[in-house]
Image 1 (tube, rainbow, N blue to C red):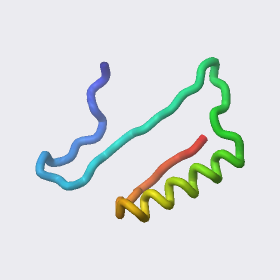
Image 2: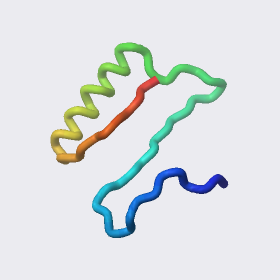
Image 3: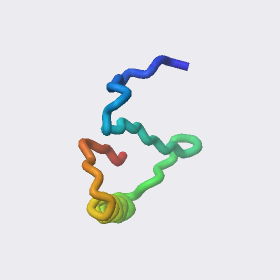
Image 4: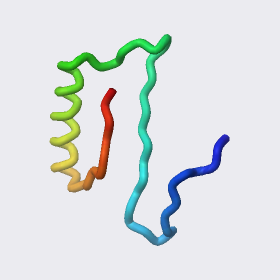
Length: 59
């Protein structure tokens, strides 16, 4: 297992998360419509939870 690349102070209120989802045989998970639905879902939940998202990538 590789060492962590992101370091932050123990007493920090920030959370760094790297979320990834992969499909079998490199199959596409999201088509263009599903990507837009996911972006809408993400925006709604960020607003509700008052979480600040710094960056994301949907591929």
